Length: 357
Image (tube, rainbow, N blue to C red; front, top):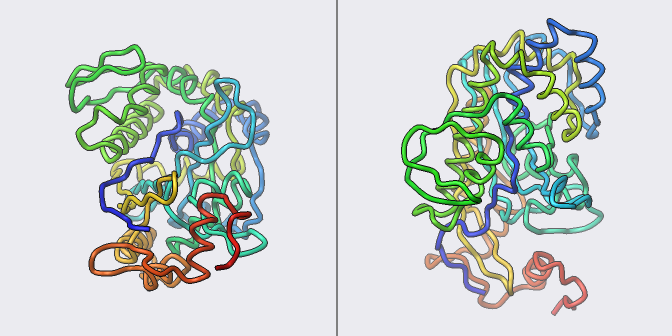
């Protein structure tokens, strides 16, 4: 099995984004102060624990934190199954430095799923399918060695409604292209929900392929923040609230959201973004992303530093596999070991074909 460094091939927007968390921070709290009882009842319905050991004092004491944003590929086009998390973003918020860092995790990244009964290495987006938000939370936390106690999961059925509810978003289109029935012209454009979905999904006409698409994803997230932080959004928040409660699950309580709004608004003044760079790998008929140890360490260090934590040398299944498989020519399985064979078949979900030879 030879791995070629030909760029990210399979990371997809999944028709949703992590903008929900940012709406919660910059709009839910504001509206709650006006219509407290109504908002509390609605948002409490989105709460779902994830086996975490979080502390309510985090938000009261204005401590930095990270939250995993998950976009499930269900909720529209007739899909009602558990699905995969086609969007995975670690949002790190530090009120002291007034910074927000959005780190994209490609859906095809090879990772050990944390919480399964045995050794299980697959595409990281399978963690949500196998064990819901809790397994996704634990898997990303282990991959990057960053504390992750909070998650927000939204299905793709909510994206268009949420963007429309905030009155649309303003973006700077990097080049002219047509997709999903809309022509996007280079320069400033105001997009509605349907247009935002198309803008975030297009990949093949982008000269940067999926890397370019990731940039457009983060453009929309930033634009949502600006829209939700405006006073004009409050007038439409009934629609936002309805879209949120029918399409989202989170282990942030209503009181958490209010504390975040009161104590973390200034963090929105500086929003930066990054993503895990991977090496594309074709294993059988499937495509994966292999992140080098150097790249995983870079991302881990950046998130931890943004959160005000000291850096720690990564030591997990991914770094161990990299030590086993890396050569100066790239990633290669010349004479795979028993365990490496298992990894290959696990990634293809072909357990029956693996016989330990």
